[in-house]
Length: 201
Image (spheres, rainbow, N blue to C red):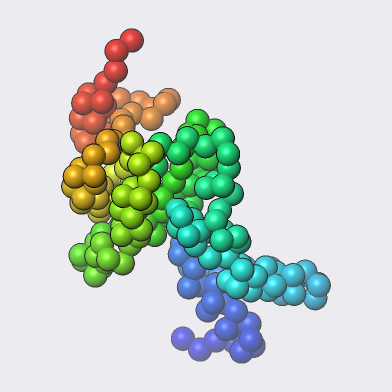
């Protein structure tokens, strides 16, 4: 389909369309939004993208994104260093931090084992996790907090198998009915998990 947009605008639309969850229509709307900014705003937007790429890297301890060599969570004095919560990506760390309930440390895998997509354990940060547990005798629990998908479960089981010989307790997040949910709309797997993970009142 022929484009009637100016070439720079078309290139901007194409770049926005590469983002996950953004279709052609949404990308066009975002591109026009950028065009409506004044020059200073547009340059600040471009600089923010460039800085994110040049200044942010992985924490050498937990693999979360940080501007420093070691992230603020790993250096915080009040964190419980005996517990490490293993998550799929840095967004999951933000989600846990928003709850204000978890006070331990994290380890970010940067993906899940997915043979269909050609992703194996060696492409994740599994080696770094094992090295952390092996090198720190204070760690006594690993919480597997991967998503309850086929890939998430497979990754959790694989890592648990590697950690068992190191003598640490490996736990899995409980899954069940969401607060405010309705039983009749829950699927069989969720209901089954709710029964299996039931607690005493």
